[in-house]
Every structure is written in structure tokens, then in C-alpha cells.
Length: 299
Image (cartoon, rainbow, N blue to C red; front, side, top):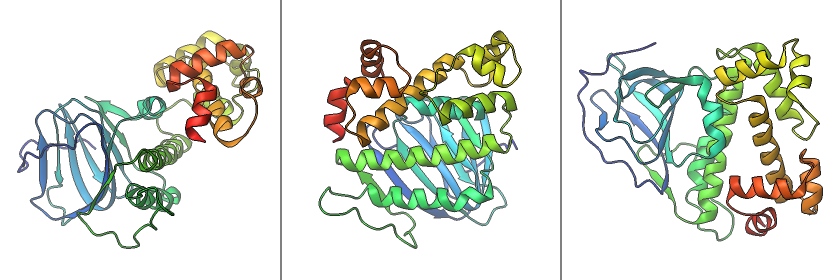
């Protein structure tokens, strides 16, 4: 439900540098407030575990209660505080740069001014999301030597972890991605404002991206014309079905490169690409490296 946070007491606090991945857990009482007149250079994700907060970005406001995930895009003035009348606001938060896939997952939850509210995440998924944030906090502190530290059972409020090494950053970003997948998929399964036929087609693509899907074959699965399906996808997800399929195939290929020793040509075919050369070009555009170099880097 929209709230008005304009009269909240506010304290200007600088955001972490845009290139860092920082994670923390806060348990704040009335009077806590943060204002950033220029916003942040990175994305900010908050996950509320108890109490209630009020979050605003630009002219858009939202209330965050237990089980609510809120995302704030970079470059827009924002503010957040313990909600008026609440006795506390306990929440996990992470500042990071977003991966390309995340925009499509968040788009159905856009409230305006770069603010995205996934509220509420289904109760059955909340323990898993909470565990992902705890693991995220631990992974960010990994030095690369030995095993990453175990998550804290009772995280110390105010303790901030910064992922300095590339391995710690990638692990931490992987946990952020896990949170977003759980939250957005769970919200979609319970409705999420997306047409059930669009959700059905998106699920078919995600389940088997290497299949020989076409707009016509996908539209037939949900008794729509190809043009109507394309219109609904563009309207509700911000991309055409073929763009969503291409992105899913590239993600699938990346996982195969990371987890198997299949030749690049086999990876391309298993991911639904007819031409290995076309696959390599698209993969490099997406991940910044050709498939072979990506495998070596992740190896």
C-alpha cells in the first residue's frame, strides 16, 4: 500500500561505492532514517524480517513488512526509515550491480521511479530467502582460502560484510540471484499481476530452453495467436517471447559451460542454437567473453 514518507525525520547517508558488493543486517528502532538526495551508484535490495519500514524513491513510496522484498535502482533520490507507528524494522540489505537477467524478473513488480516491490513473498519461500541472505553475508567475507565461513545463526545487527575478492563477489551475487529467483517466481506462481498464459509460456521456456520453441508453438500451448502472445509478453515482461527464449538459452549454455566438459559446439546445440558461430557471438555480447574463455575463467 502506498505511504507518505515525506515528513519522516531523515539523515543523509552516503551510499557504498558503486563497484562494491556490501551486505548487512539492521534491526532499527523508531527514529532511524536514511536519505540519499542523489540516490546510489548501485542497486539496493532490502528484505524485511520483522516490523515495518517505509521506503521511497523519487515520487514513489511503499511500505515494507515481514516477507517483503524491495529493490531500488541506481541514480534516483531515495529514502527509507522505520515506519510511523512501528516499534522496529529488522531487515537484510545488499548494495550491488545488477546482472542483466534481473531486470526482466523485476519488471512485473515495478512501482515507478526505479522502485520495485515484491510483496509479499509467499510464506513457504521465506525461510529459503532468509537462508540465502545469511549465506550471502558469509560468502561476502570469504578470503578465498579454505572454505567460506558458515552463516551466523544470529547475525549481529549493524555488521556489514564487503565482498572484496572476485570469488566472494561472484558467490554473493549468486545468492542475490537466488533471492530474486525465489521471490519473483514465488510471486508469479501466486499471481503477481502477470497473465497466467504469459506465466505458462515463461515457465515452458525456463523448463526446457533448448527445445525448438517458436512463437507459434508457444502460442499454441496457451491457445493464443502468435501476435497476441508477443503483445502480452512485451506489455507485461518488457520483452518479446524470442528475447526471453534467447536469454534463457544463453543462461542454460553458461551453466553447461560451468558444470560440464561438453565441447562448445555441443553446448550450443544443447542450448537450442543451430549455429555455433551465432551462439559464440551472442554469448560474447552477453557475458563479455567467448564460450571457451568463459569456461576457463569459471573453471
